[in-house]
Length: 359
Image (cartoon, rainbow, N blue to C red; front, side, top):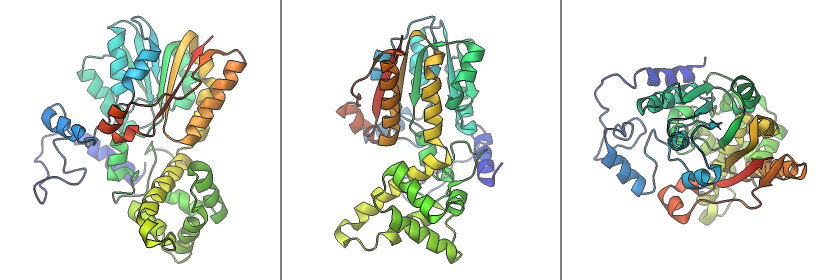
C-alpha cells in the first residue's frame, strides 16, 4: 500500500472519533479539512443547503446527477434485483432503494476502498441492511462475476463520473486547483500514481495520451515541457507542479487568452492522466461487452457519461447491439440534465445519459 493510501486510511480511521475542530484563519474555512460542518451533513443541514444553493458541492459530499431522469427510465418495481455499478457517495443507490420499498435487492460496486466503506456505513445508518443492499469492492469491468454469483439484473446504473469526495480531497490529487500529491487513482491500493506514470511514458506516448484521452490541442507543447523538466531532474510529483508545467508550456499564447487556456488545458490534462492511470476506456469497453449477459429479459440500463470519449463508446456499443437484436430499444439522442439542475450543481453540466433495454 502506498504512503498516500495510508493517509486515506488514517483519515478514515479517525473520522468517527471525537476531536477538536480545525481552527482556521479569517471568518470562513477555506481548505477541504477545515470545512468541518460540510463533513457532517447530518448535524449541519442548514450549512449544507446554503452551500448547495450557491451552486457548490459541500466538502466530503457528492450531489447525485439526473436522479429523476434515471428513475423515470429504470421504472424500478418492488421485488426486482438491481445493480449500481459505480456506488460513489450512494445517492443514486439510496433513491433506487426507496423504489424497492423493502422488497428486492441492490448490489453496488466500487473500486475505492475508502469511499465505499464510508458509503456503506452511511446507507446502513439509513436502515438499508444486508437483506436489501450488498456493497462489493469490485471493478465494474467484472460484472459477469457478480451476475454469476447473484443472478441477472432487472435494472443497472453506471455513473462514470468521478465523485466529488475524490475531486475535492487534495490527498487524492484529482484537482489542479488544490496542491496535493499527483495520484489520480480511484483505488489507492492498486496500480501506479499519475506522477509515476508521467515518468514511465515516452514523449510520443505522452502526446498520444493527451490527444486520445482528452483532445488536448497543445499536447506537443505540454508533453515537451514535462519531459524537459524530467531531464533536468525536476520530477513532477504534485498537482501544482503539473499545473505550473502546463502554464509554462502555454506562455507563447497571447496574454489576453492565456489564463483561460491554461485552465482548460489543466482540466484536459488531468482528465487524460486519470483515464490512463485507471484504464477507464478499457474498463468501460469490458463493461459494455458483458452488459447484455447480466441483464434479465426486458432489463434496463442507464449510463451517465462526462466526456466525449466515454459517450462515443456507449453510443457505438448500444447502436451495434440494437442492430444485432440484443437490445430492443436504445436512446437515439442523449438526455441532458435540466437547466435548473445545472444551476444548482455546476458539475452536472457536462453530463450525458444514454439508455438501453434488453430483448
